[in-house]
Length: 80
Image (tube, rainbow, N blue to C red; front, side, top):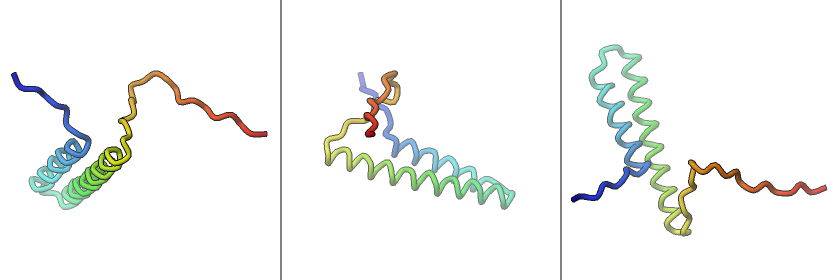
């Protein structure tokens, strides 16, 4: 039985970028094609940022934030 690992954010962004690029190639309307191309570029930038963030997390030993957590972050006390 194979283990299934969830895709990293970088891979998810790259997949989305490839989808937008493919849609741009199939589009006949110039403006729509440009919008898809720009979306593809934006998602590639997000993939690069996600990759850098993952490297920083690995270097400093940071754990991924649990975004599903119901706990609110501790608030700092106000100074008078």
